[in-house]
Length: 354
Ligand code: V47
Image 1 (cartoon, rainbow, N blue to C red):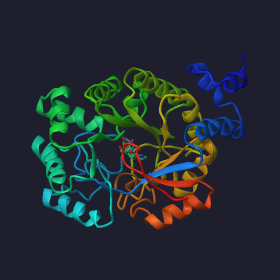
Image 2 (image 1 turned 180 degrees about the vertical axis):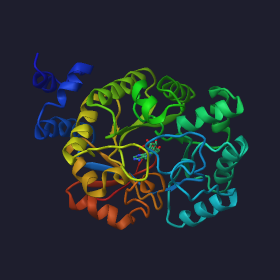
Image 3 (image 1 turned 60 degrees about the vertical axis):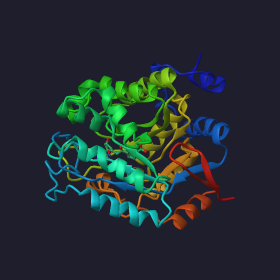
């Protein structure tokens, strides 16, 4: 059966099929990806009002793609006090944020409780704000550094008020690529196991994929299939987020940055391959706002949120440092003919802008 017949039948695609999808032209991919998007979400595009907080950039690991970590190229080291973090949440709560997204580096100097206690303090003071925090890479680091099992860390996270896990640290699951770009940190099986345990504890999470560096198209499909397999098992992933690699201030020498076409193809293919993950997020901080809006026609039904402040991708060249104002965000989605829907972190609808 040809790939087009398989797409017409809406059948689940294999690894080989996934690789073959890249040979299709952009408009054919858009057609099939958009068909699935419309079946699942119609014209709705989701976003949330959120605040990213990156409490420390001191890192024990040495990822080649990272411009955020102070142990590499960033001369500006910081580790926030809990008071500073709570002040940020206090100020952002005036903007009606529904989520704090907290991702740090792997700081060996703070102690485990510094990581945990701040979540409890946020939850005690702002019980209605969803705390999305600790990537699987951070959990793996804390497990090794403090000799605590993943299971015990997950119990602590729940006790300290973490509501869901962000999708970071997945990068590319192929171990040869991982060795080149982030050797030493969480391995792919460990990343998947941490999310498996989190889901089995009744919790939800996201999954990312960092692409556009030294990986091949085959590696991207392999990455998607490993996530699809885990999702079949647990059903705990809310969203898949392809992160477009930002090229500046880091140690990877990428000769040919991705074209817009390749980024859009990858979004569309993610929508087609990941038949069991409901939401495909075009994270505007890495794709640019303009391309995220176009990605709505290529299977993406989510554009992340207002963010307010972003330090990881902007350190590597992205223009996301200051977030996007809510009014502008809504108008941009409306101007493209889609319906903006404010969601909470686990995709309950909060407000539809008709
Ligand atoms: O895993 C680091 C990425 C991630 C670069 O769950 C880079 O909703 C591009 O977890 N170019 C952390 N990306 C961010 C993260 C996240 C982001 C948005 C939404 C969600 C979610 C989670 O940042 C890391 C890494 O892949 N990153 N350096 C770079 N140069």
